[in-house]
Length: 245
Image 1: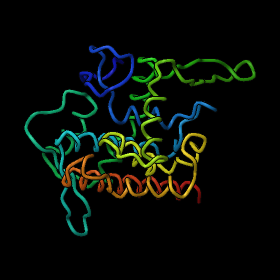
Image 2 (image 1 turned 60 degrees about the horizontal axis):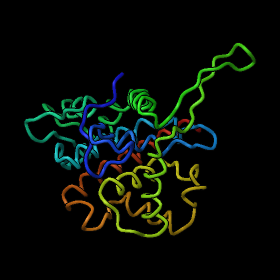
Image 3 (image 1 turned 90 degrees about the vertical axis):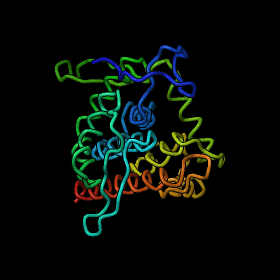
Image 4 (image 1 turned 120 degrees about the horizontal axis):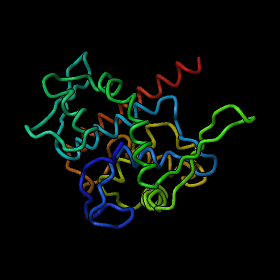
């Protein structure tokens, strides 16, 4: 599978080449949820809800989807504009809500399940993560993930740390990443990098609730992303509780 076909922008980080394709927000989220200490990805059981939320959030940032409140039906997603996104993942989600308004949680369930594999392959192809195939006890297949040498994760984490630990004003993508990490319920697994302390938790929850500040996004976009993040958090929480009972 080839990495996504979006063009690198000036604010993107990675190898630093102008020709490098831009990462999706969902790719960066998956990379941040990867724990280099043990090679695991946080929130595996409910991961597809927050990755789906990241896809919808990116569409909102690009002004390609909007939301409307529909009473008992909850929050509905609708595609905006006539031009489909170039990226395959974004385009698929945009087309899903093009001809019919979709309930947010239903849409997360529809677009989310295949995202982990697609995004993981992209991260490995880029060198952000490496994968090693081996065997346990000499015969049980085992796959081990490790952090690559691109420095991408460290750069992203430093931005999130500046916002959650130091209280810096976030840009829209960093605000979205921090909000989605919070929504995933996986912050405790990242405690070495994001201390599980009241100030950090409160800042993360504020971002999750849509308090991004005036510079991060317009009020309309912030409301859209807030609705998406809340629905992703609720869906992930319900699924996690069901799995534990």
